[in-house]
Image (cartoon, rainbow, N blue to C red; front, top):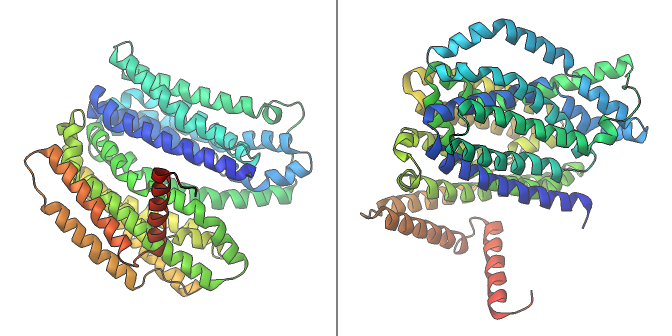
Length: 497
């Protein structure tokens, strides 16, 4: 088994454990120990630090991904890494100066509706710096084909640390400020571990790479595209988190962030599907195999739709049960529509298949960045219009509306430039089956909420199983189920594969 495949398997395994720990922290531990306002203040400070740190590295991580092999061949990898560590310094310094002098105005704007955020906003700067250099060092590790350790630090170390810090909070040894401070130290430990792993490059003797003027120009142009695309993509994921406290309150953000995490489970299987499909898609573009590209596009759409719809229904029809077993669940029921709208936005994104990946491998890859910027614009506009009137439900609906509009634009663009289309008669059949399953499951009403949860979950699982097995709506899923059945029977009867 190759190094890349081994690392990929390890990283995927670590990521899924991280997701499970994240769910434990977000849905059960935090609501038990923290108020919605405290959760909102914590989420805002950490997410803002991550958001700014990722943006202000100004494409340095992308430079590592693209140019590290070139400088490694020339025995200049250490000099190049030192250059990358200094590359974002000017824009980072400028931002810190602006933040220091504008801090009063910035804090005042949040003190009106979210005073608790103002108390801890100072932690954004150290978190931002630590995330910035973590992002660059992770890219260096990735370029050196060391991907599992950074994933371990990011997905497991930080989450286990959060559980420990929350236990200290439970013992009343620390308050919310102490929790955020210790979280900052956990990010520091993450960065220092990465420095240690890459010490031969980061701490080696020797000078910093001094690129020639044409190289500098090329670096800046490339970084600008990466910056625009990355900023747009990050803004899409964080803009609601940034705007809710301004128009509403930290407590509303706490409810929103918790309910958003529940709905985000729907997109988890896309990671595995994308990892499997990307090498095949890359090869198809290399050989200009339009038929294969069309097949991948269509199959990814129908497969992702069925899996996404299954997960969405399992969450949505059992949403009352989730709030029932969740600590302090009554305080979070305000976010029920957040789960609905964010869940639907994830299903819509899955329905449109691998449209972003298709653009990435085509000669029109630059349009991906502009589509991200366009999505960020829609998100800002709709959040600005809807949050003041509809609160966190408006923020969630803004996401759904933005995702539908942008995916439709991207769909039309791909049809025009690549002549590909993901939908066929199976899409309509899938929608009909999903609608029928939804109606049947919602029709089940039992006085015992636990029994209702079990019955609804069983009916949804059974009907989806029959829909896939008894129709040809998704050949890939049908084959997958057959393989799983065969594997189980072989285990039961002791037969060899």
